[in-house]
Image (cartoon, rainbow, N blue to C red; front, side, top):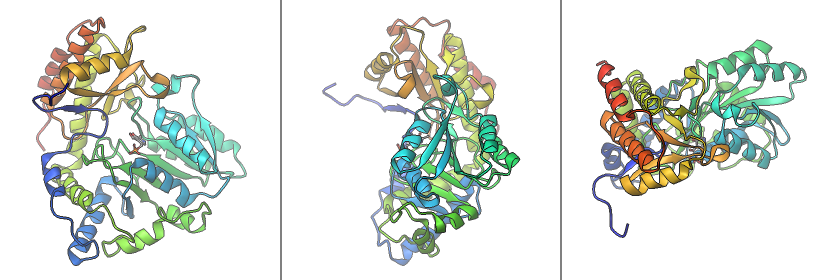
Length: 398
Ligand code: PLP
């Protein structure tokens, strides 16, 4: 188009998610002195509140970086050159993290199921347990898994991975990427015994991209003192020290932190349980639509359906990217593309953060109309099915 389309764009990719006006307004305030007293008070307040979202009593380190930076931070803080790490192929993001481990001079072992099978399932805790059992010499220093695999819409059972490590009595650290799960899918850093949790701003926290997180265990902090991979900008020690007074050792992303403070207020005012229930309900409504269309969902394990996004598989012979492009051009609706091994085979509907029933109905309307225009055979109306689901399942008042 050579003019700006009317109405509001529908940003229904699984992150960045729409930023609420309340957060945009908070971020529009003047940038202040990051060494002044006003900033220190803000820093202390948000560093305290964010622990509730990770469900941890320990520090949460915040970086002015995208999620990829926080991935690197997690690895370089606790590992040494040549360390063996066990990773699991759940999809594109697990694959990228594994590539990063290789580039950092680690020795990742990439467990997985054959072909694209693992891209429809979660982390197989029994495979992790079996591999750790063989590792009597404790060569494996960390188990790294993705909680909510954004490329597929599968949310793995992290407590099961913890149980697998404990069943063997293996000392490996547990590192978990919940970049797209935090504040949308149930996540419990302390209860699940996670050593480093990695997250980002642009998904469930409803912020623009640009800040990311490491929640750390005592064991992870102790390990970081000995670990030998080079680290300076990412090193936790100086950040945690400066954070005690609400400051950073360098210039933080002041305005994104205004936004984070507002986001935390919004999430905690609503109550995390309510936030999670809202996501589960939307996901179920979207799945009702996919079922009515007669299409397949990328996730094959009903216990692991993501509350954050749903991967919709296209029938053989249909180019999912062409369908997505038509939907974007005709309806000003952005959907997630198939990544890596499933490129062109599926598209992803994000249902996270600042949405409501009607934005999702509109999204499903765009998908339905776009698929019809693309000649995708649909059994029934997904829009009607989702409307019906939402009507029959009101979100209980708190
Ligand atoms: N891990 C997961 C699960 C993600 O969804 C993403 C981004 O979508 C990343 C890692 C990478 O984060 P970023 O793009 O913010 O660097």
